[in-house]
Length: 203
Length: 67
Image 1 (cartoon, chains in turn purple, cyan):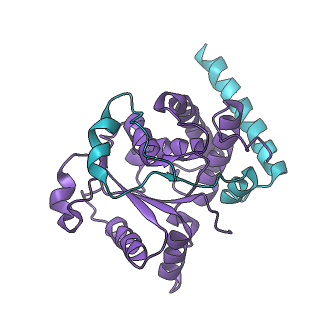
Image 2 (cartoon, rainbow over the protein chains, first blue to last red; image 1 turned 90 degrees about the vertical axis):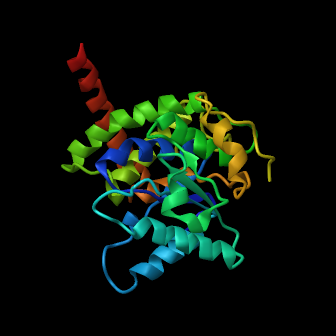
């Protein structure tokens, strides 16, 4: 898939309990005309996987890293990918990253190397996850309010079980189902007049 | 690059955390096209329209069952 200038890399927990927040982040990105990119686009295994993740991350102008998953089983992928984003930025590439956490002040203990870079706290609430994205990502012409994005989030949450049945899966964290969700939501956002002006359905 | 906007979260979370972030400039990216978005799910315009029709029918059934 060709990289796009609007692409935003999402580095988030791939767990059922996180679906609501993933959908919220996705709705907010759609409202600013950005295309979400996740590592499940990249096939598992193989020696080239790390290189492809790095290329994907580097092709995105912005990355969003949610470091809320600190329980069992321990997963190191998220802090690792944040480290890659830091390296890309430090090397001088035009890249910005946003940190998210569910709980305030926890990151001071879990990742003290990043003291001074405050995460935005979503508290497991969709509205606050949307607000966190809209605080740092914008669109030309006008600001977008959280209240404008919440109806899109509700629509997407209704789509999720339908798409899961269609794909006979319990998980949203796969390329096809997630891609279909984004396309349907993008289309809906056009109907809701939520997309940046130059876009319309079938653009 | 636009100036950092006022917080927009109704809960006030944005206002609470906006000031302290400091690391992130407010970024406005070039919007994606619908064609770019279709690529994410490996869709074409035609397969998307089939999907939308199927999902809309599913939603109508959902509403009918709820009544």
